[in-house]
Image (cartoon, rainbow, N blue to C red; front, side, top):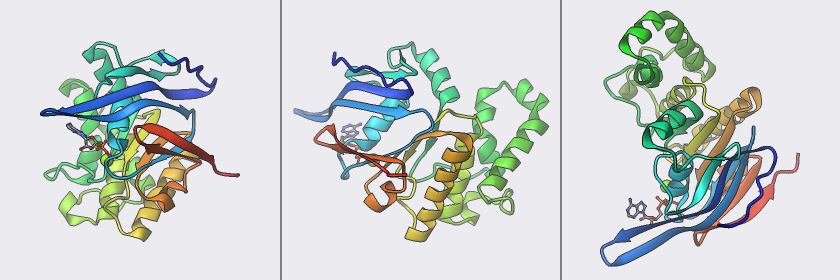
Amino acid sequence: MADVIPVPSSHLTSVALGKSYRNGANCVEVLQGVNLDLRKGEFLSIIGQSGSGKSTLLHLLGLLDSPDIGEVRLDGKRIDHLPAKTRDDLRNRIFGFVFQFYHLLPELNLIENVLSPLMIRYSTWEYWKRRHELKDRARDLLAQVGLDHRMKHKPNQVSGGELQRAAIARSLITEPEVLLADEPTGNLDVDTGKGIIELLNQLNSERQLSIMMVTHDEAIARRAQRIVRLCHGQIEYLREKVA
Ligand code: ADP
Ligand code: MG
């Protein structure tokens, strides 16, 4: 195991993470010893070509998949090897996810989509008891992402940028500590994409939300505080934005 001393303010850490996929006789080594720290309250971009393993890395860090070797640590404690149930609880409590294709449920309107993680988190009875408070929270979040006029719209009745804003509101309803965003602007035109990055920047500075965003677009990546590049299965270089 590589001896990586966690930075004191380190929040989410990957230690010598390795992951490969077997495809028949071929073995694709995607991650080959990734060491990376997301600091508390930081907005970090991971850039890399298509197929370089960005999504794989995000999935490992967010406990959606398990590494072959190495560790994922949260506040210095290893979390990737915990029992499945503990990992599920941790994932729901700590992480928010935003994806390129939004993954909203088409039959639910936007406010119902935002509420959906809580319907999963709470029992039916608990949810029903708290429904007014939870709906107020969902309304506040939709207003914060600029969708107060779209709450009852279905996903097919709003634009791509609005879908991503709703998906961001949904990711925040569980009050995550870390937001993992996989190509959040990948399906949007340039200006709409900029609006989404501005929203992420605002959430980062106002809520001290730690954000790790992967993108293949360097112009988008530059809007974060720090950029790292994933190349040949490893983190290649770091760049800090000068304040
Ligand atoms: P990126 O997000 O940077 O485009 P990915 O992490 O999605 O890259 O994929 C990295 C590599 O791993 C690609 O070559 C991809 O084909 C392969 N890969 C990803 N997931 C799987 C899987 N479940 N089974 C087999 N190969 C996979
Ligand atoms: Mg990807």
